Length: 433
Image (cartoon, rainbow, N blue to C red; front, side, top):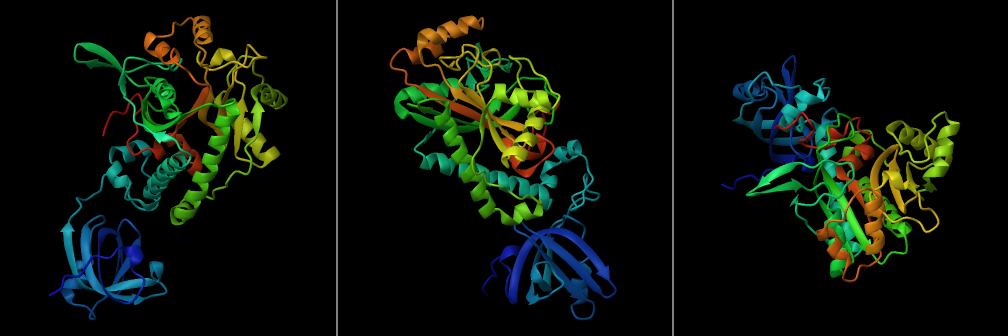
């Protein structure tokens, strides 16, 4: 006897025999009719049993606890009232695993469980269709980022996360025991990106874990996140880097719109592909903010309120959700950012804001070792020898950027908290599960 192969719910589109497996999403009873909703990784389908028309043991088996794992064999028939337009009349129901009751969190479509408790039981939380959709979309973002950079002739690299060098100004390191030595968890792949641009690859890209030992308690910051970093050589200036970023965002948003229609619809998200991202010097935007009642000093960075106000301004004036804020003050940028020839207090750097939140920081880097040393000295720093060496043997003009995949996902889906875009987030208090 031939064993029936399992079908995914989303593929059940015609009448006939079928085998489906999944979790019990919900049950309800209406007189002599019982309904059981079965959910798998693709969708939900209705199992319908009428007392007297199916065996008594089958009718009894349709009373299942939520999240029990079951296997159902039966016949598919059309039904205008069932989700997806089809239902299954069962011939056999097998319980593969029972879920202990009560469940520790509410996994219904209308869950009111708070985020901290949901994170404690994230493996249950991700069974909810809306939460599951977030991470399917994040998976698509990841894939399309890789595809984009591969097609743009970037070499995709993987750099060490246990290191001895930290370059990100203002970011504390996690110190770890490394046999008889002390090491730090990488704050950024910045040093390694530059190393291998100089190493002959010219264009490198990495997606990997980044660690920041900052006691930040905001909806935007994490102690561990997934960085999207690229570096490219033989650039004219920082605009070459912004050109790649703009094309990247257009490509990724277009692709996600195409292959995650159902998830975006479920989350009620309508994605807008940028036409042309404005590039505006910070000095000009500070004047805009001042007219709106927000005054910042010449060397001040943008705070969260400023970014939000600028997001609203750019959407109103340009009809775009994105803006490149350029020429950040030298005072708030790292020593390795290049200065414009005509502005010793500025930098050839930028931030990319999406709907009023910064998602990326980039710049043209200073590749001339004598100037790099002077800039480090001006910041009260000394260029580490390991970093200095890569500029001694033929350093090319270059620049790059660092994104956070978590924050890209958050902004794309309008999530209130970056933790919603991370399966198992890490912050100053959360180290488990």
